[in-house]
Image 1: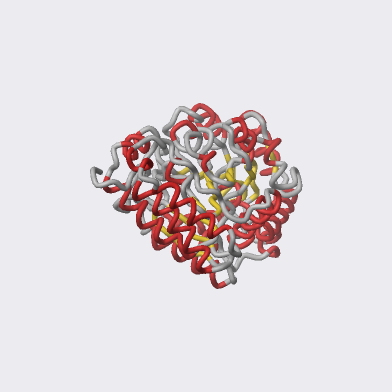
Image 2: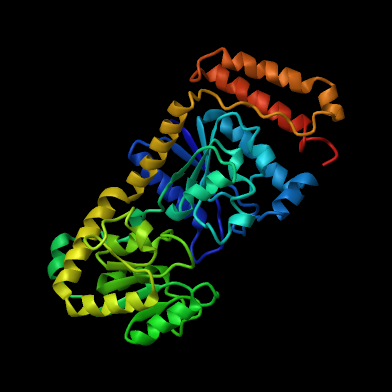
Length: 392
């Protein structure tokens, strides 16, 4: 399986593009055939949310379509395309991509209406980062949806940490929480929790301590006894869910029912349903340190077994293979253009493209020429149809 992974490159304190490419390089060192493609226009920059994306597509925005052109050419050498951040690809373009297409999103439900909902059904498989929102995708008309956790990365933890250190080492920070405190989603809950534990280490936009530099996070986690995890709404979805236990921090997390689908409750993590319950649990485990250490150690073992960067990526690959087998998938059908009656289609180019695609279908899916013909058909449709015309 040869995979092209599309990613966003947003402004940050370090080069996100270089970070992603380094991650993909580590995956390749484990035998995974994957390359990257930046989907951000003029990186580093923001993603294009719906309806701006739709507007740019319909007015044939040069910048957007230039990126689409590069992507269509790049895809010729791949079997699977993964839109890892779910950004910047219009569904009408996606439907014309003739290889297996995977949509991934880790920002539901807060950004669903302007990010995932308008586009997810144009892919062959949707991978949902929020385990609580998988069924929501089916309600949108998505045919195949699976949960795909964020997990944690090789750069997210102290590689020298051992189970022995978790069980017997010294940690001097009672409570740690790294998250923003500005949005209305959870501010009241955060304020109430912080008032109960003023000794805690709180960092992020809106906290008096401000934003913690990336290089200071792992050292703080190595000193932390308990990591509290409070989501905006449904979840678990965030990186904290996996980074906390990966660093030997005992995690106490909300969305208890769904948390129990990721970790074993009360053995690997502890869940809560209200901020009052969270406060009570933190008091309990700060007083019962041996129990805290046992949970932290079990969570550490589970995280490193099931949610490391290689295991999580291979999980995605298994989802792809499972859906392909289930649906007897060989080649993704080229979608019919939405405007069949325009002058371009009247000239018969669509029929020609379909003939090329039919020729490809007659060949083995792994045949290089067959793959080339599929891409030719896709690019033929694109360049003569909705966005490739000279009046763009």
